[in-house]
Image (cartoon, rainbow, N blue to C red; front, side):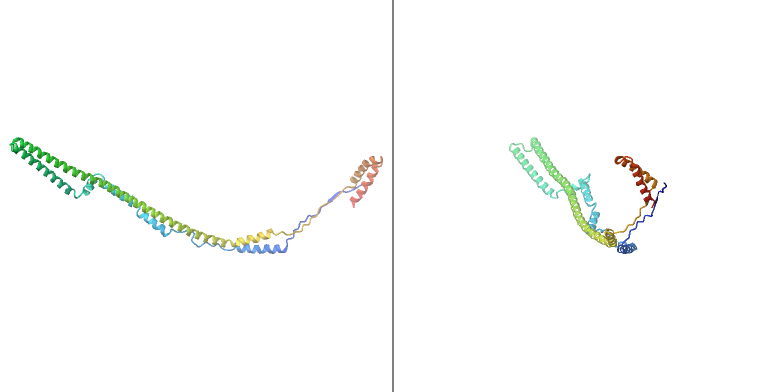
Length: 294
């Protein structure tokens, strides 16, 4: 018994048909994409950064022009009471009416001394000792006491006047320094407020410039956005396709089929009818061999 085996291979072909409407849409998108890509670069011609405002410039100028005004005034006030300058400053601040106070006081003291001298002379005359040595000594002592009191009175008046002048000089210098500091602090506060107002104006202008730039950028990106919408619509739309494929056909061996049939028949026959299994298997195998050779 003879037989043949083999397989017949065929070419597998997969074919997907694209609908015409999809082809037309793709071609249109390609043309639109070329149009968008060929658009030349356009530089933004508007202002992008807000400039310094007039209020800010005014504040800057004030600070620049008055930067050392306060410190200079404070230094000048301190110089008036430094070293020997204190003497000159206090001398200039002496009460011009000091003499008007001193002179009457000395005159009153001298008058009181004269009265005391007269009393002493009267008492000496009543005792018959006027012009005597004792009277002379007492009169001299009384005159010395009167002169000492006059000097002490004058010194006290002038010392009080000087102390007052020195105290006035110190107070005046401190007042001038405080005024200078207050003036500069007030000016700086006003300049700061003006600068803050100018900054708010600048921020508002910057917001307007940024909005204008954003609008310009949106206009520049408009074509790309439209192209993306068109491409998205095409890719998101479902469409059918046709796929064709061929599978290989295999041919079996007749002898193998007969042998396989005999074995199967033998197994079946031994169960049903002893001795008939082999014959039945041969019959089945022959049929299979014939069909395989066709």
